Length: 151
Image (tube, rainbow, N blue to C red):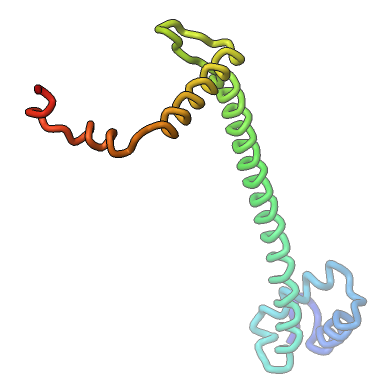
């Protein structure tokens, strides 16, 4: 019996050379075809079939892993780009909208020094009023009834 013009004895020799890493690419391709043919169906060629099959699957998976890695890296780059654009636009928006504004006596004031000085004055006034306040009088004023209020 022969396959592609070679006898089983020649295929055994090719398999031995394959295990010794002495075959050409053409011989390996022919060996792959032989190992999936009905002529190599016996247990005698199981070891060769397993090793060749494992190497074929390994080569396929390497290409798949590279493609997956490329897609994953491209996805991360796209996500980083989008995040960078969002952060930059947020900072630009925040800086354009971050202004000190106060209405002092009904007049809009945007001078930061004046606004901060007015804020400090108001805080000092509140804290001094709170320290001087009589809690009993304040609570009494809050809970005054309408009859007492009208008197």
